[in-house]
Amino acid sequence: MWELPKTIEKVLAMRIPIIGVIPLWDDKRDSLWMLPGYMDGIICAGGLPVMLPLSSDEAVIEQICQTVDGLLFTGGHDVSPGLYNEETSAVCGTVCKERDSMETMLFSTFVSSMNKPVLGICRGIQLINSLLGGTLYQDLPSQFSGRILIDHRQAPPYDAPSHSVIINRGSPLHSLIKSDRIEVNSSHHQAICELSPELECMAIAEDGLIEAVYMLDRRFVWAVQWHPELILYDENSHMLFDAFVSACL
Ligand code: MN
Image 1 (tube, helix red, strand yellow):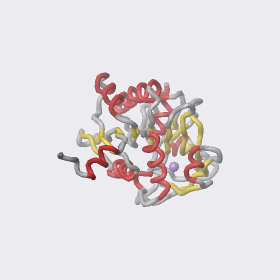
Image 2: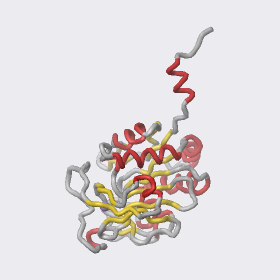
Image 3: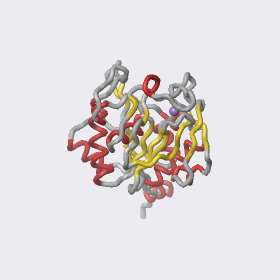
Image 4: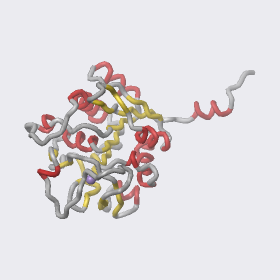
């Protein structure tokens, strides 16, 4: 009798979470693009990353939500201030209306209705806070002055840590990383101003800026302001992707 080769049997028996990755948008080329680190971080954690189309079509959004086990809200453009009911100030950066619209729809179905897992990175933390009733600094340099001066838009290389974050004891991030302080990279123009009442802070920078949050009463909705996908040589980055992908099983 014909039998499946052992390796294929193994693959079929394994449950591999499919992670939908929000595409990045290149304004100059009018094109989707992707950073390999988002894909590699998920693959290393045992998931299968799939870059999504940029679409706000209701049927497409529904299909995505039914098909994927987790969603990665990637970095990118500034969030439209309309999402948190503010006028766009002159210091706000370029926005991407298509992403704002798609991610708003995805979040509503995938998280609010279906309670499926999400990891937010950079723009991701800002977007999630905005969708849950929080607000953002539209431009950190002109609107935020912290306890100490930190440049949250570090000069290259972007894979080098540039400031530390203090992790709240008792937070799930602290249980995961088992450290009070880690070094992170920083490449963001905006950040959380007023924290959503549905989010809990997990880490702050030394100037007081919120750098990691999670959503209460959800399976797994975590978000960080730094870029773990650019520092995959760091064990902390892998732990973050591992926690996310495991939650999608
Ligand atoms: Mn930062």
